[in-house]
Length: 433
Ligand SMILES: *Cc1c(COP(=O)(O)O)cnc(C)c1O
Image (cartoon, rainbow, N blue to C red; front, side):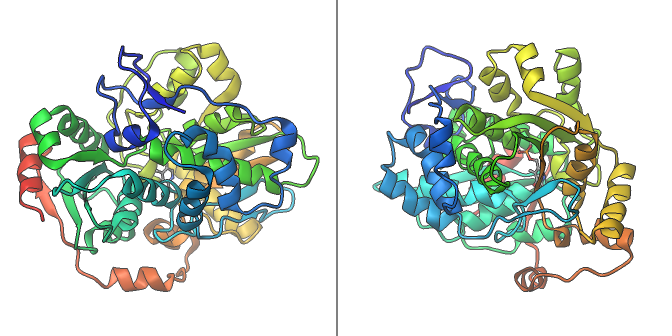
């Protein structure tokens, strides 16, 4: 299925392979599939009992058929999604929780990043001596997921931009301790500054050309498509005959939510989405007022969701033809404060013994506010050990650190610090290997 730009330029649709390589469309829009064919209910039900990579393959195959045949896709998905994604129910009367954080960097972004790295390496082509440079802005978790997914992949290098002092130590070590083909740039500014710099770098013909730039942010279609898979996976694990579920999505840049909406177009039965945000709430405000007002993000306890200008809003509104009423019928927006996050972490631990990270806590809190019809599935986006500075003092206990994480925490952090300006980024990129 070819991809076209959300900005609907006169450019002919491009193959998925080309959309993967480009990241952003030349007109500045985001790539979307030209059509999303829906499975029948029977086709969907037939996926019950299949593995996650098999479900992913069935869901995604028609969307990438111009680039990967089904056998190739199945192999790539099996290699990317090689970690468990359990659906748990800590409290038998409470919501289900889909734990997406058992991958190498302990956050759900491993799903998209690992898949995208494999897809991109498969289509990158040889013959050009310059490596493909993956330029990525991170509010915390993307950087690690992308850096580790591409680490030592021949013909590629990764440059991670992150807001200096605004990511947790556990997040920072995921992309500043790898070396080899991974470089980290600490930007004196916010995540939005990092995202703006990435966009400016792509728009700068000389810079983009000199480095064979590509993007691994959720603006890249290769990050988005694989995320459709776990919506199907979660629904397939509910008891047979369950009514359609409400899915609660802790949201920042809205990539996760957009993938969920695309999954429903593909035939995955979801009753309704709840998009839960921090007080950085441009999307809930947009739903309420119909007007998008970019905000300067303020830091909260759920730092990976502190986004004032969610780039996937453009894709999301495109999916609804810009029709606010239809978007509102599919998605409810809810805002959760830091105080509510702390209270939810405490209450979940006291009630069912479940230890939630701050992002998952936002989902758990929003689930309480969702209405009572049908099962509720909360997407758990990060491992609590990734945010010990929040969770440990709140629960007044020390959390066990997964061994691979402990090893990484012992390594030195290496990053180039720059002001939030394109020339400074260009200089940093010219001087990294
Ligand atoms: C990135 C991230 C989010 C937000 O996801 P989006 O796709 O940007 O909306 C939520 N939780 C965690 C832990 C994240 O890393």
